[in-house]
Length: 383
Image (cartoon, rainbow, N blue to C red; front, top):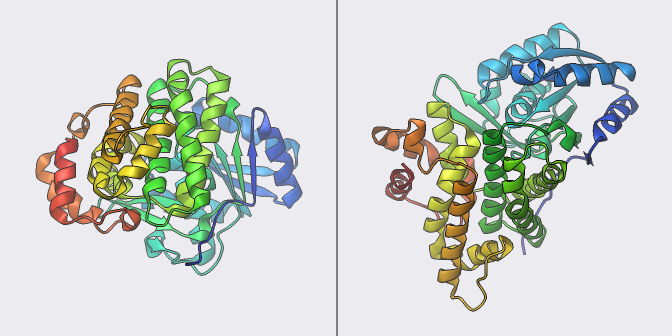
């Protein structure tokens, strides 16, 4: 028997209207001034102003950094950190999806530990807990609001750095589906498939536990029932709330069981071409699991069953094939492209992408360890 650890924020607020409860919680912590880390689209939609005004009602001041890029960079972290230090902020609020959350984690970590965000690439490289972070989610997919994962693009290497550190865990996560309403269908689809990827990779991970298994399979079930609805009608509050729960469950799973080659490879596509993470995951997911089927067919059959597919009486191999077909159908139904070449990926870049993918920490818990030739073949199949 080996020891397992389970990481999660101390407090997690969920449900329509819970943003107000979050403001009360912030006041109770005694914080005085927040650096809100977000992006320009959310600022333009008025969501940032809404949060700032709500916090002001509870005596909490705010400074806004809205310069986060879709794939946050080392430069974004440095710029946000300077704004935090110049304004004497005593905590950080991330507002948005995975990009603001990851950037905020980088800022909060370096604010306390010093140095450069590149110093913390890898697993548990920091010495001290980051500046307190409150993560307010506006998408249902990345679960970055409640995980210890922080993905930052190193502009000099064109590589997405995986920073996996218990000290980046927020102290409070907020999932208010009212903030997720009317998000574009393409964003809803990409983030939803990101959540499905988290659940599947955690379920077939080499360090999965009964706790992460339960979270992963329930997440798969809810996503299969709710994602198409959320994409078709962005104002469907019930579907949005169900997806918020699903992505959180998937986050609980992968935050503790880690991930696999889908993420290790998607990080390279995102870092090299500046592509949307969820879409890369969605395209790669069936290809990587087809490779994993050699050792994880039974588990993939469990995923198929959670997706509502009839697999009783089938062999493990046949049930796994049903799983792969169901994943592909879900992707197609919600408008995910069929290959990464449609996004601009090129065959001549596969050697570089492969080399970097094999170094990514997310691949260490894939159920079958691959050679460079095998990773290249998966990339080629996904084009």
